[in-house]
Amino acid sequence: MSNENYTPHFDENEMKMVQYHISKYPKPMAAVMPVLWMIQDKYGWISVDSMRYVGELLNLPPDHVLGVATFYTMYFKKPMGKFHLQVCTNVSCMLCGGYKIFDHICNKFGIKNKEITSDGMFSIEEVECLGSCGTAPMLQVNNREFYENLTTESVDALLSKLSNS
Amino acid sequence: MEKIILRDIPDLDNIDVYVANGGYSSLKKVIAEMTPDQVIDEVKKSGLRGRGGACFSTGMKWSFMPKGNEKPKFLCCNGDESEPGSFKDREIFEKNPHQFIEGALIAAYAMGIGAVYTYIRGEYWKWFNIMEKSVADAYKKGFIGKNLFGSNFSVEMYNHMGAGAYICGEETSLMNSLEGKRGYPRVKPPFPAVSGMWGNPTTINNIETLANVPAIINKGGEWFSKIGDPRQPGTLLFGVSGDVNKPGVYELPTGIPLMELINDHCGGVKDGKEIKMVIPGGSSMPPLTREECLIAKMDNESLKEVGSMIGTAGVIVMAEGTDVVDVIRRVTKFYYHESCGQCTPCREGCGWMLKVLNRIMDGSGRKSDLDLLISVAENIEGNTICALGDAAAWPVKHAVRKFRKDFEAKIKDDTPLPVLNKVHGLRESDEYDTITFQSEQEVVEGLIGTVQELSQNEDVKRFSS
Image (cartoon, rainbow over all chains, first blue to last red; front, side, top):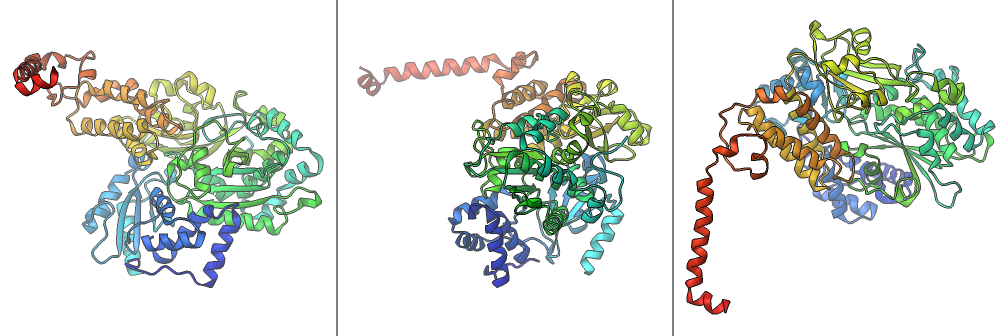
């Protein structure tokens, strides 16, 4: 499971990265999205404290950072499972059995949409089209790797591989 | 036929392979031999149209940018690609990223732009990293940077990662997102070419549009204008998905018959079934019936003749046996989820349409619901700041009209009408007769009685006199 509670802090190298992001744009405000990504990559989710921290770094009011963080669905505003499974159920995936995959995982773990398993290993989310329509059905893990052309068997294999890693 | 973007060369994503195959020669050519106006004229001559859905002439769009350097100018490359059914830009990032980068740099030269931003959707983490590497490689080889090839043209290029918002594919919303704000679309005018990012002139182009540009410069606008349908020349990256045997991205000339695309290139419909419905250009576009599919050609003008549009060329094929109502419900759920919430018609309307479609799916739909859906959709369409409102309304409106029988089959005749819907109850349905007028009359009489009673009251008399 991602860190339940944390004190947001960037070390020297990470601060250089923040400076790099700021340097890409004419105004520091534009760096808010990449810096929020840095927070999420480091701690797993974005807490209100870290929104304040990002605000201080970029000289922005914390409410602006809150506004941005809440607008975009890929920023997690609460801790997620160690492996966050994002199953696409949009039209192309739905036609190829996206809901079957989604229901299969839900039943396997006994959890519902946006819930976490009790051991904190897995969480599941029904997401919108991830641009993998030609290789449907698919799921994404932790906003990163795509797993495509899924069947219930390949999902089972993937889940056991993840839980053993 | 020869492919322009997804060329059959292995490892084309490697910059050395790309350069060995004539890569970045168009960029050298425009900087050494052509003036910016000549570049714009060449692109105008090619007839290249935007590949993001609006199909606006690219050369024309570029010519709207002000000349001179009083203000910094920006180019934004739209790789947000979130339209359900569309997965073509991902193919470009993966197979031929440098052709897109070269196209973006040529565009920057043509408009005198100093900074290029590529907005890539947050879900494309893998492809974002490919782009980061490709841009870094291009910097190393001296194709991006200060005083390119010894000229006085300098350009910087950056990638920006989104974070999961469909609306950021809308150009003004994309600009807000890039500025580090919530991705709300802006009211136009002012158009981006006048006041875009940070109040400066900005042009937004789709990834696929820009990837076509190097070939146009190399082989000439006239060559390009002869490919495919003359009204929208060139090739399109068709992303075919759903019930076909070989789904995937196919680069084919515009104007190709839809059935040829499905049968000859995608191996036909799964299990040899008949077609039920096809969405020709991503989920926002009006769907086609089987009869329309037989005559449809895949370019914007031809599709308009059968009442749809090319959009992002994301073709979703649905075979006989597909539940049209369920598909439309899922599409509406998507728009309900992705509406940014700025304009009331879209924010509320999408929710209303979803509620109605949900109850039709549950078996508690009412006869009047179909008219209600069309009415809600028509009240969203055209009444919002951006085109997402239209995008949400079109599939519902057209599907109800074209597949009315499928919707009606889900509605039982004896479904009770729990609430009196005065406006829509009156429309061509007999439900209004079954509503007891008596009760309404009783209510009115009761009210009159109360007023009469009150008027006798001493206190009321005192105040009213």
